[in-house]
Amino acid sequence: MAKTLVLGASLKTDRYSNYAIHSLIEKNHDVIGIGLKEGLVEGVKIYKGKPLVDDIHTITLYLNAKRQIEYYDYIIALQPERVIFNPGTKNIELEELLKKNNIFFENACTLVLLSTGQY
Image 1 (cartoon, rainbow, N blue to C red):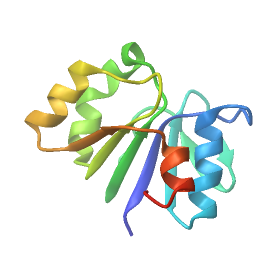
Image 2: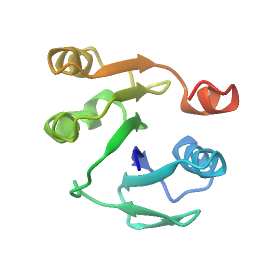
Image 3: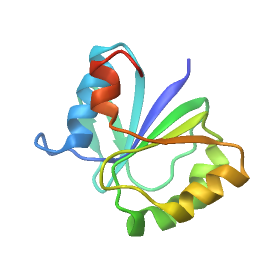
């Protein structure tokens, strides 16, 4: 089953990435997360580092442009169908890399896409 990777996942309940995990689960999406701390959010495993995962459909970003740099090669290697740049994560450099690798991206809000049935 195709998965959504929440990059910048937080165990803190007041973070948008945490809200996104809850919303994705509520809408029956298969989710994994990568964050600064390992743990569980709504039964979803949050990993540290760059775990080997396959069948990633969407990567939704919750890292600012500077913090994304260390993940460029990882994101490209996962070959997702799309990358979502949530508010505050826009990154022209990464967008150019995605274009070169034929990976669709959009500047959008995962929470809005989910709540309006566009995800």
